[in-house]
Length: 248
Image 1 (cartoon, rainbow, N blue to C red):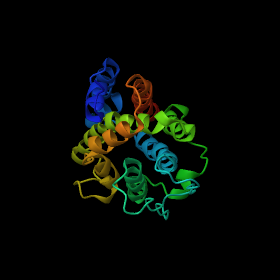
Image 2 (image 1 turned 30 degrees about the horizontal axis):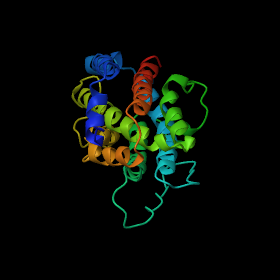
Image 3 (image 1 turned 60 degrees about the vertical axis):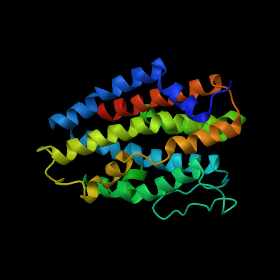
Image 4 (image 1 turned 30 degrees about the vertical axis):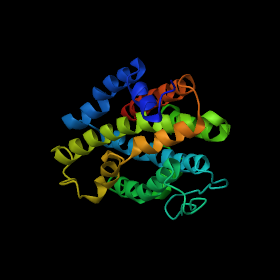
């Protein structure tokens, strides 16, 4: 008997590669440094610089997976999400994620502002920081999924969201707590600080994420085996992102 979408997600979360990913993230040196108060300004800036480009790329990928061709803004600051087609259709996971990226874009600029970075400095080549191939592998794979136009791409992306986004959210929650509570970061005093709004937004669990993802998985009617590799790769790319900004 074929698994439901929710059963598929649960099985993916129990895969050994995901358990290994969770363990590596749990003890990642970037979060350890943040908690110990030894996270440097350069490492915190790297988070902002890499996330700026990741957000821009992911928004384009999510738009494509939601069925919107030609959405290619050069900045998310004033970008407007294309409307669902048809407008009365149920909430689509990728349409929802696109809206989230657009909402979070100005929040990232506030985070960067605390580190003396404006949007121009985030988008322009900089002599004191080289964008990391390791950090950008994550959005590059999302773009690959979006561009493939294959039947399994949407389901693979949905499955990856259900497994990866909670992992990303837990990392953001730990980073939020470390920056808010650490004596080494006096510019932050509470969750309500504008400079922490980006991290706080992504630390908040996505309501009905599993249900939205399961709907796409079931609609595409793909095998479990077709979903394993994309999920595994995105989890590995998640680790690479944190590795890259720790090395900054």
